Every structure is written in structure tokens, then in C-alpha cells.
Length: 318
Image (cartoon, rainbow, N blue to C red; front, side):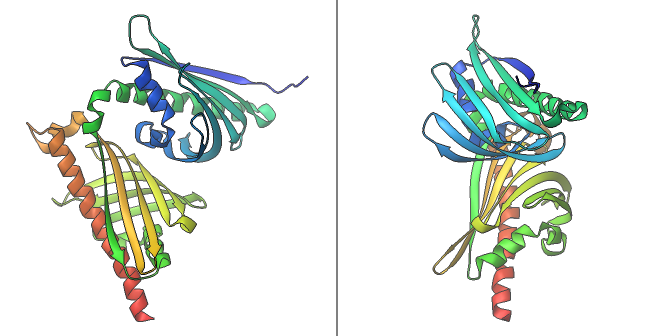
């Protein structure tokens, strides 16, 4: 008989939205970084309409963690089960389920269950996992409730766009410029300060001060996941400017036979409650969308052009 102790947690929230809306948000794991504060990035590796494999990055007690998960979706029962197949220490096993229940008076009750074991079952390790589960589960449920209850506004709140430049130079030099963010204060005029650490290979945690068009400064914090062989850097801002509730993005370097296309992609959830405070009385979501598009696009395009110059200048000097 096994003497491994299984620890269990249960979290729930009542949501004033239809069960189908709530289930859909949980099922769409690739968008979790946009809607769930702890989630940084999700890659769907396999999906057959029911079973899926995911690679996930998220913060846990201030650390960036990554694992592989298997999930089974059951839309008829409105239940999704999950199991980590490659957890990070001190977690030895982790599994659970999302359960979407229709409330008798209308709306939804969402329940999140976790069962986990810890190698050695040391008290401090168990407490670490329990704290991470509790903190992240509460944040995820609260955020999902807020998004689901504003479902009819979501098309206005979410803004996605991209900018690109064409580079006649090697993809490796373009990627190198985008990767070496620690050098940006000397190379990128709108970046006045940038502190970066790399707690694990390909994982960058950074804090950046950006100079705005009116001469002000705002500070953001981000986690970046770097895929050098794929020419991709994905990121999530973990501390955002006032107008943005969430901001995720990607730098991608796409070579072809005649050169390189470098793309900057952004997806933002606007913070509606801050619109008039930031943009003035009478401003609404259309003005906020235009303002954010112009501000992010201006800085992204400037950075793309600097990466272009870096690569093309190096070629001319050879």
C-alpha cells in the first residue's frame, strides 16, 4: 500500500454568465495568458477535439514555472480534467478538473479542483505548492468571472494587431537584437531603463521604463519566453500601464529566400474603468483602442526598424 499523501484543494466562484460562456473560456487554453494573471504562455502541442497536450508557462509564488499537461474536454458534461505529465519540483504529481455547474437561479458556479503529491512530503514544500495553488486559483477564478460577466463587451475590450518590417539581412542578427533586451536603453530611444534576469535558459524577467510621446514615463514588468530555433520571443506584461488590463505579444523572425520579415504582434485587454481617467472626460473604448494601437505600434515599429538597421549594417560592414 502506498504511503504517498495526496493533498487536495478546492476553489469555486459564482459567475453571472451562461455556463457555455464559462466553459468556452476554460476550454480555450491558448488564450489563458490574456485572461488569467498567472499564465504567461501556452502552446498547444496536440489536439483531437477532445484530448490535448499543452506546454504551459506560469508564475507561481513569484517564480516562472513550466510543465506539460494533458487535458480531456467534455463539453456535454461541461467538465475538463487535466494532469501534469512533466511537473516541476517540488511537485511530484498534479491533476484536477474544472467543473462548470449551472446554478438553479441562473448563472454558473465554477469549481476548480487540484490533487497533488510532493516529493518527500516535506512540510515547507507542501506549503509552497498549497500557497501557489491557492494564490493562482483565486486569481484565475476572479479574472475569469470578470471576463465572462463582460462577455458581450469582449470584442470591444480585446484589441489585436501586428506591425512588420522587411529586412535584407540574416535572421540570426535580427533575433539577436530582439533577444538582448539588456542593451536596449543604449539602442532604443524610447527605453530609458531596463533590468533583466534570466532565471532559466530562454526565460527572461524584465522591468522597463518607456518614454511616452508626451515626455512622460511608464513602467512595465514582463516575462519573455524565447525560442531561438523558431525565431520567436513571446511575452506577457505582468505589470501593465493604466489603460491595459492585460497585454501579451510576440516578436517573430521569419526568413525566406530573399530576406527576413520581422513581425511584432500585440493582444490587449483594455481596462474600461481607466479610460476617462487617462484620456479625459467623454472618452470611450473607441478612443482607447485608437490610443493603445498608436502607442504600441509606434514603439514596436521603432524597435523593428532598429533591428533592421542592426542586421543590415552588420552585413555592409562584413
